[in-house]
Length: 277
Image (cartoon, rainbow, N blue to C red):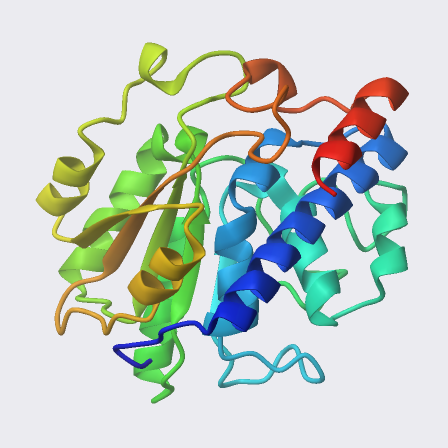
């Protein structure tokens, strides 16, 4: 990965457009399914766009290429955000998003790698995504491969003990080809994160577990690209704490627990799409 990557103005505009289109697809898919999560996928739109359109070494024509970078969506309830970016990137037709959460669909409510070969891990129960990420990073070393493993973690994830067990293991084995990204939108399903199990001071916690830590604005595309492309620490795994807004892009959804996992009504759906034009 290069140390400097200054986006041209045209590319910056294109990536921002893609992030907005990702949000539109999320709203459309959840509304059509009558179920799903909105807030989390909306907060991670820029992160997912930056990863899949600028950062990851991937092969859309060969999803299981052995040298591809791996990506794990630990916050599996945000699956529709991942499906939307995969569709935009060309892994499958955008029209397939209309099957989201249907019986026999490849696009289940939580990612299922057994039915969609563009996925590197099945996730769902919170807190379980970083452990396989550590395993993938170690496998690269053992097999002489140069790929990186990226894991997107949410607030609820960060309150689970398994995340911190995996964090200790990653530091012990010096998995410097592992990068965790915290989609830190600070809102959980039914409360504000700090009023449940507060994960602040989040930087100090990860540093104390032996990780290389950076913190960014998770909606600033240039800042996201610059940090994601920084070379890894020679002996430490890396965590990027991205401050984000739950429901970003739709004013009446932003920062609201009510929009964690509910499908919009026809009226709210139309209002949301209007704001995302």
